[in-house]
Length: 153
Image 1 (tube, rainbow, N blue to C red):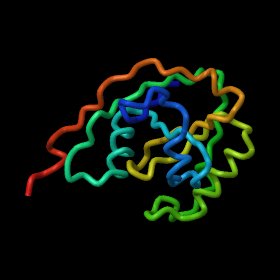
Image 2: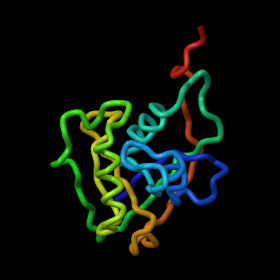
Image 3: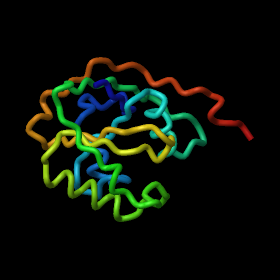
């Protein structure tokens, strides 16, 4: 399975989960490392854009292509989500679900729906899992954001 994430160009290891550990996110609390990825490039861009304030486009970002072996079993959380799982600010339920999944360490990856793009999917990766070393970065390219995303007043 191929997944994608957008990251800072200056970061040399794109799979630490450090940003999520420091800041928390929809699926994890601060202090819990998690790598957020998406199943396609377009969702990856949308997931990144909804987390940025855009007076100007982000600079020095890359899109990272990651390969997860087909033999990896992926857990799926979508069955147990409440109706308001995708509101902002995040509800504690989603962070608790993600934190509990990380602590159990039973699966390397967790499939969750995208809050940014309906009917699309994200794959969360647990960097503490024993199978983590099976994941490989296979390509890194400059992220290209259209200037049309930011309108001059």
